[in-house]
Length: 109
Image (cartoon, rainbow, N blue to C red):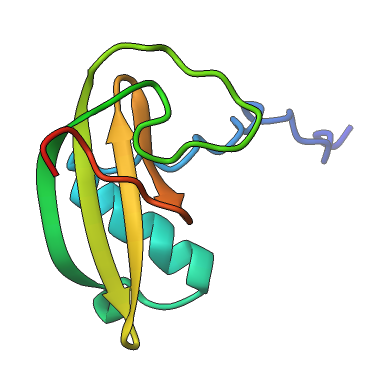
């Protein structure tokens, strides 16, 4: 008799872990904008990034018809630029930086 040519199956492949985001909110915003625009991160310039206090849970980006927590929220405001156009990214609480199309100023400016 000859040995069987059947092979025993190896370990089951694990699903790919989701990519981890950088801990720095500026780097998170740059990665998000580059992905949104389909450009390399090297094309994204940081105009400014500040720790701010948002007036409420909208994090300076209220949407019509929505209700928000009425409390001061610490967070960040990052302004990025690609090809001469500026993009505002806001974060705060447990929310990662997100693109804000209609940015409002934080407390104090």
